[in-house]
Amino acid sequence: MSLLRQGRWFALVGLLQWLADWSVMVALSHAGLPLAGANVAGRAGGALLGFQLNGRITFSRDGRGPNRLQLARYAVLWCTTALLSTAGVMTVQALLGLEGAWLGKPAIDVLLALGSFLASRHWVYD
Image (cartoon, rainbow, N blue to C red):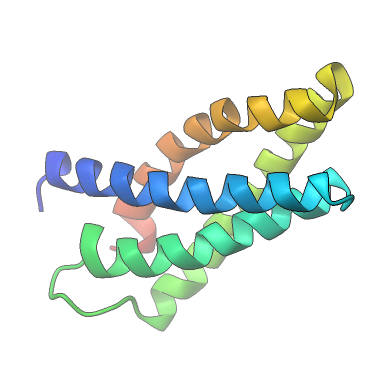
């Protein structure tokens, strides 16, 4: 499968995944849930969407959905990126406040997406 094709699909799925993630985080933190919990909830919702779409479209070799081994690998990747994302937004919140964290989350997630693409391509869906 071509790197360019996978990169395009990963970016499109990632955008949908990120919109779900960010929307949930902002809504929950605006409603009063602590930012760390809101961020993890948002990432979990986005992860469910992204795992299925990337497994079926972006990295699929036969058109079938992802398998259990891929799910286990994805869980490890997700836990790692969720921890890094939460640490990042908490740091931004400490420096710039809650609204700063809302605005800073996209930059944090773009950096994490680059590593996530490589891990997904060469380990999770391999």
